[in-house]
Image (cartoon, helix red, strand yellow):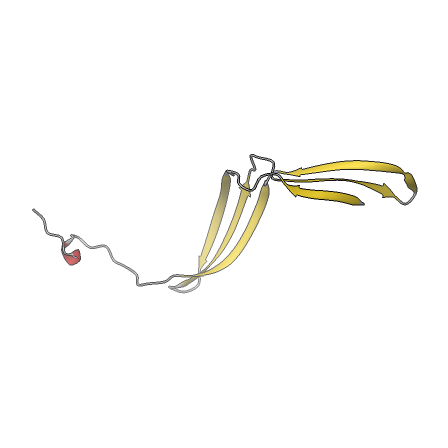
Amino acid sequence: MQFESRVINRFSLVPELGVEVRYQLTSRFHLAYRFSGMLGTRDMVTNEGSYTVSNAPDIIHDFKVVQRGTSLNHFLSMRYRLGENLKNHSGFYSYGYREN
């Protein structure tokens, strides 16, 4: 097999749609699973080449593969919440603001 790979574009806008499920472990830690799909809009990488098979080495097969950035993604993560939990205040007095 002989092939050449090259980058066509480095940037592309890609729409993404997904869902996320969280499981609270403690007040600060939770597990999260995210499944998302991305739909590529531009050709990003191309692979072109040729290959032969052992039972017919005199026949050369050409191929071209173009990758657009389309994918299905699975993420599993453990997250930690930083900072203090803030409670809703009834007014702005605690922040130094005054009503006119």
